[in-house]
Length: 427
Image (cartoon, rainbow, N blue to C red; front, side, top):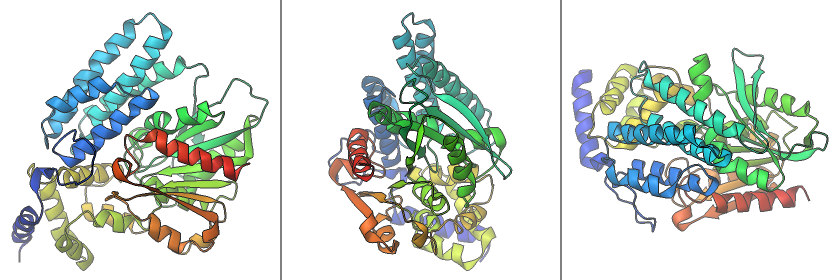
């Protein structure tokens, strides 16, 4: 069968087996922000950032009202208009706190304006919108009581890690517990400030965010896609922390969020200076998680080794606006983040991203989040089974409205659980 025939047959099967345009099918008790489940998830995630000054509730709800479900341009344009307005308001604000909070919101809206915009990797908006968000975030950061320190950390590989260190206070002579936070597939370290660092700072912890290959800033500035050997990113960052006078290296915790659940676990397996590991969720194998988003016939085609046919089918999905948003966005962003034009190459690369043979190296206490409605990377239970010393593992289950992937909209609950556990580990 010719590739074109395979494409048509597979797309027909997808259309008949799944609801196109991602019509709402969830049975949970969270208020629907869009009939498109992918849009709903992203809007809920942004809405949740209001807890830590990353958004305004009314503005996000207003955007949700006008965004056309399944229409990427509608989503992007709505937030670009909102971000433009908020940036203008921040720029003329006379009060320092007013300017800071409004710049933080503008930065978050610029990030969302870019979120569904990676289908055309040469589109200048990918860099333009990111420049805008960095400008806004930097302006907000400079108005914090203790501004975060931007650092570029050279590595032994062909890239530099990019990080921001937020000190708990201005005392640089006293060592303090420190949380090192890494995201995964799509979120930025600027997102991490709102989801993790504000909570850490409020509790007297330092917090450092970082990015490596494939992640938003490094991918844009250094043109490098994801790598599997994430210790090449984290170990140089830990070296940086070890040289600071305000970091207690005996109380250093590493957090990995989403796909970062693999990245952090991989890095911790090779970095003994990590004294506590928090994974939200635990990830055993990245490829299984990504392939699991595709219909079974697509998975069979990938495993058959027919790369040209697989690529043709997957790229046809991307160009078909009636296909589910989760598939279209997941493919588009994956190709951009892994710096490739080939879906099969993207997925082959993820094959090396697994924890096989590394679990016995995880000797530090481990905290795992398990979302009962996580349909993205729901591997925490498998992770627990693979870890040899299960007495060293704490599994926290999030259910109901908090049960989605990485608990969007429930950051305060997540941080409560994390820091209660950290207090116990380091008491």
